[in-house]
Length: 359
Image (cartoon, rainbow, N blue to C red; front, side, top):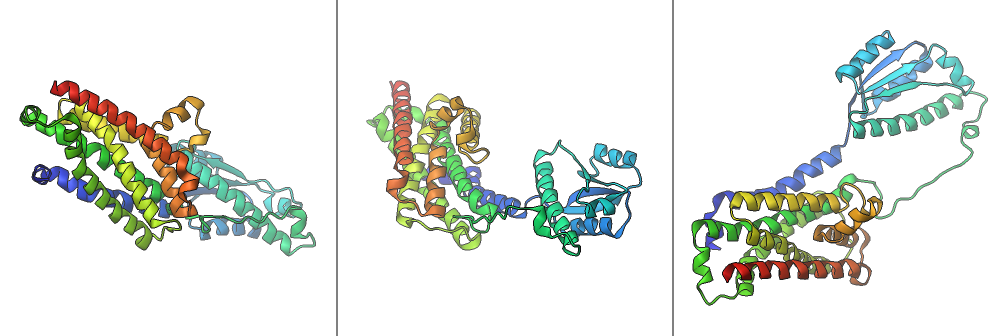
């Protein structure tokens, strides 16, 4: 503990990183992609076409900041990146709408895939609502346009808030960073300062050294988790529907398993730079394979197999199931068992490597 407190830079990182990471991610996912720069080429110039443009203007998704007079101008704006969406309204738009045969061309900047996909989805939804409004004042019944009435009900995240899905996974990532980095740097720092050799000549056995270096990391990471959990539940309104005691217990188990990576890195790396780089690579790989970027079920079979070797993948599923679905141990025990197997492998490798160093 004294050694850790003297390491001021690491102390600042440990205190600030988890809260900063959680807060910044929450702000980004809550805001989403809004105010997409949009250019309009209206060849119709009718009340009908202006109503369509007004619908886009009134939304927070699109920000129409360019009205152009030709296709060439529109293309130039997209090529320069000044506009991300281009809307081309044909000359016969108002007449075509009443005939139920209207076509509007939309040009999307595909270099920003997320923006393009969101813009496309919003435009498709707005087009349907717009046509329904226009036809409401005619002899054509809006219901004739859509014969299937689809009504959806969302479970576990009724308001479809992205932070409810994202922030529990961010807690897992933040814990992984602390649990992997701290034990790795703790032993490497002693090696660089020459004090590790003094430990080797003491009666300490390898597993006792591992326990001594792991205990402080477990306490620090656990306190950090309590802070992140409080921030999630009380500030960001992420629901906690399951057992708090079960979540706290499995979180301690997860931290202990993740520390196996840190101890293994510390037994192999010779400098703090190597240790930090190794920890960074492991954490990034865990986050990618945890299901935060892409659900594990949709990954190639080889990647799914690799993902199951990552503790973060299992804990992300555990924390989301407990917090959002109210899952019990009987429902998540496969992930708990997988955590135990991975942890056993990591600690056996770490102790074996340290034992060779001590010998």
